[in-house]
Amino acid sequence: MLSCLAPAVPRIISPTPCSGENPNVFRIHADVREEARKDVYALRNKTVLDIEPLKMMRFEIERRETERVVIEHDQGKWTMLEPTRGRARMDKVVESLYEIRNAEVKVFTDDKASDPASYGLGSPMLRLTIYQDQSKAPYILSIGDKDRANRGYFAKTNQAENVFVVEEGMVDAILLNMGKWSEAEVNDSG
Image (cartoon, rainbow, N blue to C red):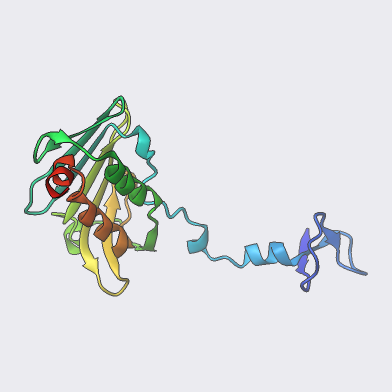
């Protein structure tokens, strides 16, 4: 079966044969033609981590040369275990988790991380580990060096082999919100 691209016409649900030609040749209307113009990048899944923030059981952040931060969620109670023990601010933790969930890959690289150190992923600047279920492996996002050309950071997950670039804004939001996760800091300043 052959097809021809029709000029822009109103959307018609059923394909129609090109006028005066072989009935096995169909016209593809403008809306379908527009979908066919998308490149491979537009069709790729750009989700960084496919997590459910409210199902999170444990959230760990390891930042190069600073203390590790660990938050646990158990039956509605949000607890900070490290660097200091106490209650965690659910609103700020969930805000950060949604920032991660809604983040998209900015640029895909073609490299399968044969040399992670070249991207700063040998010793990442930031490593996020999110546990959702006891039976499942955790979601791990490693964030390496800054990619100045694309205004982002090189990153890799434990669910894919390729290195990609994430938005600066996501990384900055996580780093900024980390200091707001403990309820003690709210009580001290309030």
